[in-house]
Image (cartoon, rainbow, N blue to C red; front, side, top):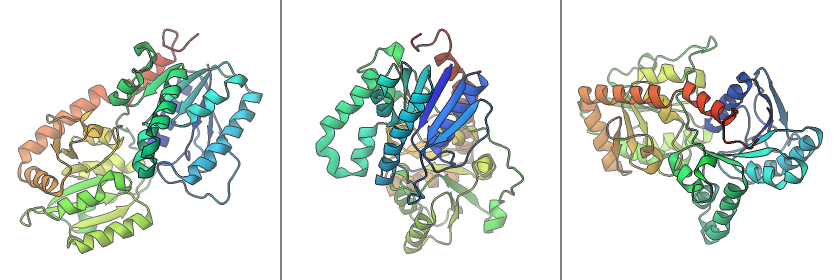
Length: 387
């Protein structure tokens, strides 16, 4: 097939959605499809046989697009719309695979194409907007109506988690909804870059707890630091955080200092995704203190695959994948998080049991090969795409 993949974000950058887009493009191209990817002006080109990358005009005054909705993202979306018009005027496609809000662009341009529209539903856009701007809650009805319209008009909806599947099935026939879950990243090629040996680098001899990801508020870093500050002083446990922008790092370093834990909390900043597995393997405990969201954080799948025990907040974003058999789930409060750290630090047998169960789950349900099989079934002759 000739497929136009719409990616309304910087591509390629090492963060959740662009990683998933890259793996989707790789899977489609390896299956023999011809894929054009239309994306923002920011990001690095990647070399995948069969993939062509097209970008919106360079907006010199936009040099960074934060995660989530922003005025910069909306302006880039507008440029993406006009770039899409030009692309559709020049090329004919069998499928327009539209991620996130770009589904509205694909539907609005149907007068120019007869392609099937696949809505790649990575999250609920109304939920994201309401969480970011509380003042938009009075617009809940029109926002939800727009989401239902996109779900109804798309030919196939591809949600990333079960909660979004349930939402899509309220307006779509189940056979038109395909669950495409994320996967553990099998990235062991470090490209010659040295990987820090954390205990030597930080002069730490006890147990290591590790958080990997951005430092946006919804990730629960304030909760994590407040909880870690209440860990039993007799517990020989250090906390390492990988990821975050320079501004975020400065803010949270100041927060750690104010809590009196700066001697046991280490902020390393970003590290290449290709080194992820090396860092996870050095940890004794992995932590995800997320507070909001519906979709499961992509890092959870790599956490599971590492064979290390996980402590995570007991919210639906986590419990769609995690259960008490493979992770320690705690209430999103500092006291509960501290109690969870104390429990895992004191019980090596529990750490081993949870780690082994999580790894088994990752390798049976959340492997890249299973992701590829779902994509190939979607785009196969017997898949749900209209002929």
